[in-house]
Image (cartoon, rainbow, N blue to C red):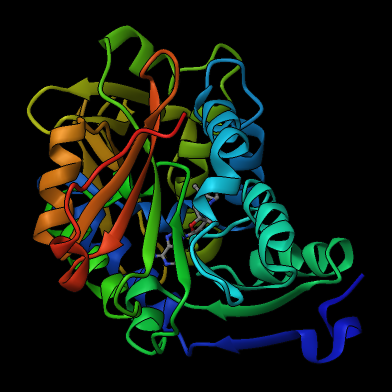
Length: 342
Ligand SMILES: C[S@@+](CC[C@H](N)C(=O)[O-])C[C@H]1O[C@@H](n2cnc3c(N)ncnc32)[C@H](O)[C@@H]1O
């Protein structure tokens, strides 16, 4: 099954990227800095994406199951937004597995649906598109392969759009970066368009940390794969055995921060004349922030980015929530703002 089999039900655009140069520059700078880091977007090469798909099956990582249950419960209300055809516009669509619930509900409500998927991984959007087009004859897919910030600036607003940012992906964009991303997304929406966020909620430390420290080490493999990728793609010589995965909730940032920690002091060549990265024993490389939201924080974020909360839908244990926002302007005249769906 290939996207080419679906004629004009499938369109794609691929943004020129400088991925190889960016990766080289970010890794060389990040591993030689005093506070070492590698941006989390580099976690998702082919192996990283496959490992992430395994993570969502782990009993400890219950976020996807909670999110799926909420989507199934509320999908028909969420997509009931217009009389005409709905456009679903998803950021970081990945395998688009969860999106199926909303696509199914949108077809029931609107008969057909346009699904625009933005993902940095062209393989991921193509694979997901082929499966969706095969399964749903009523769907047209537009695949936009590039970085969010590249792509969103060029997505024209189209009335009756429901944007999706699921999987607590927003949590990987803490602080100003999240604000910038949501403002860029707002620019691609028309008045009264909506945004559905799936967010992991702040709870007790043990539950939050358990999700990132599974007992069979899949999350550790996902983390360490970023160093394996540095070795593979840059010809670096980092000894993976010297690093351990660590994920801790940080009260200060409100996020579970994931690191790779060097066991002993070492210096590793970064390959290709890029010099060496020196590690002290116990030194950390920051690789991901997974922010845990409170409802108040979300409301403040919505206001800062030009949205207003229309519904807040926590699961039974208040461990995960869907937040439905509307693009502000005329929406803020229609108070009261928020509702709980039954
Ligand atoms: C954690 S997965 C989530 C997939 C799916 N939405 C879910 O909830 O299961 C994150 C997805 O976002 C994509 N991604 C990460 N950073 C990105 C960026 N800066 N621009 C575009 N896509 C990005 C990755 O390729 C990956 O498919």
